[in-house]
Amino acid sequence: MKYLYFLLTTLVLTSCFNGNNKSKEPVNFCATRDLEGYESKEDYPELFREKCSTCHFLYKNSTGPELSKITDRIPNKNWFSLFISNEDSLIQAKDEYTLTINQYSNIDWSHNFNELTNDEIDELLSFLSE
Image (cartoon, rainbow, N blue to C red):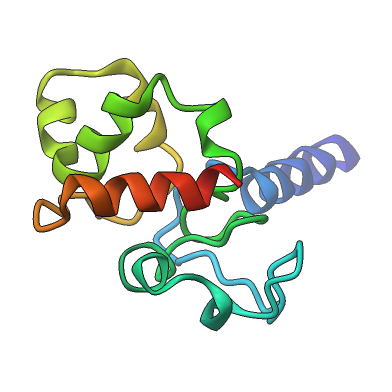
């Protein structure tokens, strides 16, 4: 009986604290301060606030993963541009990195900001690279 209790407790704790939690509840963070000098999302550049801050912080995971120093993780600048402007095309092409990223959250959301110019995407990438 103790083993069964231990096993059930372990399963519950694992599902609660696993970064790939696929429960239907969104991940909520109560902290009002994103680290590294940004007091809140209001301190972010306007483009980031409009397009990214609903799901992302810079220095901690939220509904979406943290985005600080993203250039260390992404395949290349061209991939980033395509991911931001037309993620669906990468999914249709079965891009391995994109499919891996999509496993992070159970939120049904795609980055299809095709209204952004190349300059805006470069600006966003520059900000995220700081």
